[in-house]
Length: 239
Ligand SMILES: NC(=O)c1ccc[n+]([C@@H]2O[C@H](COP(=O)([O-])OP(=O)(O)OC[C@H]3O[C@@H](n4cnc5c(N)ncnc54)[C@H](OP(=O)(O)O)[C@@H]3O)[C@@H](O)[C@H]2O)c1
Image (cartoon, rainbow, N blue to C red; front, side, top):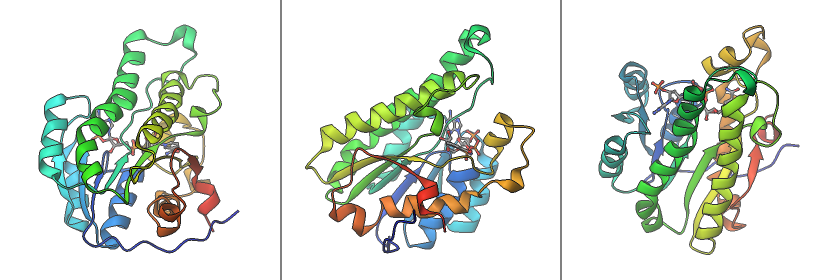
């Protein structure tokens, strides 16, 4: 299935992309900048963020999504926010739950779930001021819908993302702030290579192949039908 939509024009809009220095976040930052958005990218390592900033003109706010001071700084630096892409996450260990280290479980949940909660809560007033037409996109995963052995805390964290997306969407229903989830599917990034070291990355779609699904969630078609509280698959938007 390929879903038709009009490529969004994003001049005058501000987009915050967490984890915008690498992989999918980097492709999203480039795509939204190319469509005229003012993009703000975050991440813990400055070097990849600076590279993306040099290519796109994005603003860098370096820090950890689990750090309240960083999240407050992000809200201050952004000011106006029309689009929030909660993309930052870690994989954690690939291990059966029986052997899964408890500290690693907590760390994955802290970054992948608490981090999304904190960033979204901090930026919510700005997103509400930009409504109608503001959008939150939360990066999910196939293992956030069907649990699979050895995906551990990562899978549990993505189930939580699906849940947070639905709760937030329900709370914002009728307010003109859409909240949706996006499952990129297996994509050629460092995270996927850690999860599946034996896989040939050249067999996978690239981060750029996932961009159309994000653009759909930002499109006039999605806005006019009031699309919110859903979880879409990037493969439905790949040609
Ligand atoms: N690639 C796939 O096959 C796939 C499939 C399904 C879902 N996803 C989801 O897609 C999203 C992007 O993943 P990716 O594949 O592009 O992986 P990636 O290249 O590892 O990107 C993850 C990004 O998150 C940032 N990050 C991690 N922890 C952070 C923290 N505590 N605070 C701030 N930033 C943090 C990382 O930067 P720093 O390390 O510098 O902080 C990095 O830029 C994730 O939500 C992932 O779960 C990916």
